[in-house]
Amino acid sequence: MNWYLKVLKQYADFSGRARRKEYWMFYLFNLIIVYGLTITGAVLEIPAIAMVGSIYSLATMIPGIAVGVRRMHDAGKSGWFLLIPIYNLILACTDSEAGTNKWGPNPKSEGNEIDAIGTE
Image 1 (tube, one colour):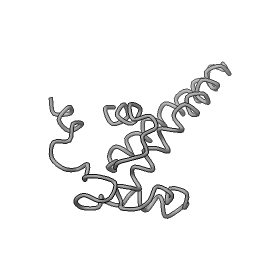
Image 2 (cartoon, one colour):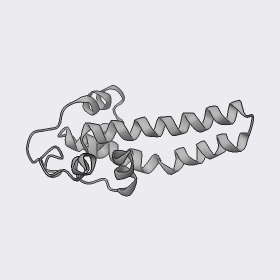
Image 3 (spheres, helix red, strand yellow):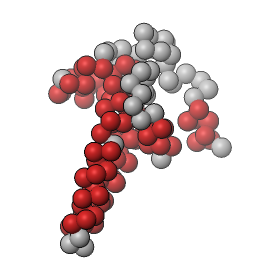
Image 4 (cartoon, helix red, strand yellow):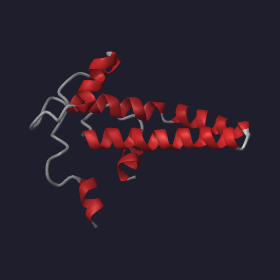
C-alpha cells in the first residue's frame, strides 16, 4: 500500500525513475479499487457506485501515466516509449538500468525510503 500512496503523492511527477515494484503495486491496487467499485455497483444495482469508479479512474489517470513514464526512465528509455503497445509492457517488466542514468540514480540503491518504512 505504501507504493500506491507514493505514486499518488508524486501526482504529476514525470521526472526520475520508478522501480518495477512501485509500478506494478500501483496498478495492482488501482485495478482492485476500480473493479471493486464496478462490481459492487453492478451487484447492488446502484449506478452511482459505478460512476464513482469512473471518476476514480479519471483521477488516477495522471499518476498512472507519470509512474509509467518513470518506469520507462528506470529501464533506460524515454517516457515516449509508453506509447508503443507491446514494447512498453516488455520495458515495464525489464529490470532497472544499473547505476545512475540521465533520469537519476537507481531507485533500488540502498537507503530507499519505502523499504525503510516497510521494515519498521
